[in-house]
Length: 84
Image 1 (cartoon, one colour):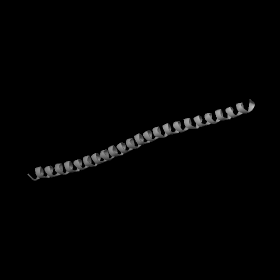
Image 2 (cartoon, one colour):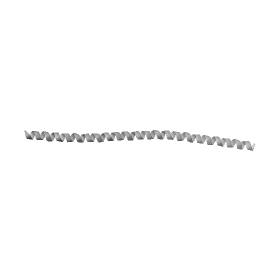
Image 3 (cartoon, helix red, strand yellow):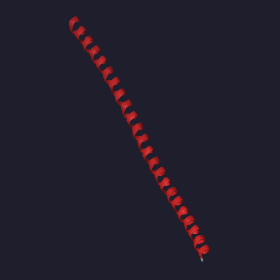
Image 4 (cartoon, one colour):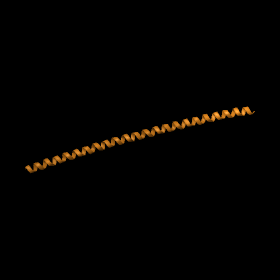
């Protein structure tokens, strides 16, 4: 009877240790999942910000080109007025 009791105690101890290892693994997996979610969030935010910055830069470049073109046309009109 003592042998059976000893086997049950050892088996229960091993099962308890095994469950503890599973809990640690589960916590590590959970941490990895959270970290990956944060990384994905950072990537998507960065892409969205880059998109906004690119469109703003494009708009500003177009405004500079438009202003430059208008100034050149004004200079051309002044030159043509002086020649006549």
